[in-house]
Length: 252
Image 1 (cartoon, one colour):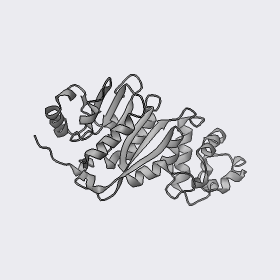
Image 2 (cartoon, rainbow, N blue to C red):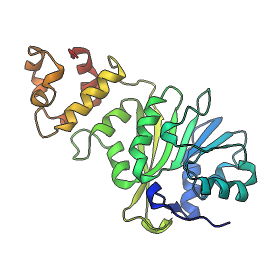
Image 3 (cartoon, rainbow, N blue to C red):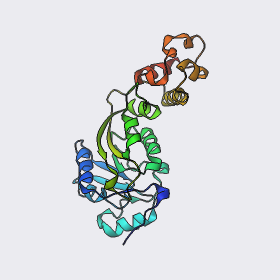
């Protein structure tokens, strides 16, 4: 059975076996008993993941044609595919599980936000992203690409940029380079007043990143708090710890 590529789903299928093996090797550096693959597509990674011993493996795939293809090509996957939209799916396991995938580029950022919702249950993520997104997730304060995604992810996960993946490793080749990153949940996550306060502060600060923090987030703090000298800085100059501490001073 052949399958078709659907641009509407951001599909670029990995065809380089060496890259597949490198992703699986990176995954195996951490112990896990349950594994979720997001967007298996044509099964480039899946065929290796199905061979991992003593792992409860599941895959989530929205495209019905790919589900049928995987069922016919890899019979051991039958009963392990969740045919749903990952962004709307319920958690696939009741205990901790690792997440892996060549993530569809058009929803890769939303996939990370979903992982953050599930963070008590997801200790490790190994994923392929558009290189620009991967760099953004891994970037440090002061960098031009340090932003909302960098802060929200790094508050709870240590991020390691593993390697580049050239366009020629895919069918069809995307217009941009890709990159693989690994997220490992921190033992010392940022101490925040609440996730809601933290997300609101970070998003508000970076939505007007050219302004000083005082002007960007003035609606979230009482006037006397805004006199603190930290508000003279811009969002990209603040560390994750700076943002975390500020959540306890927020009025709203």
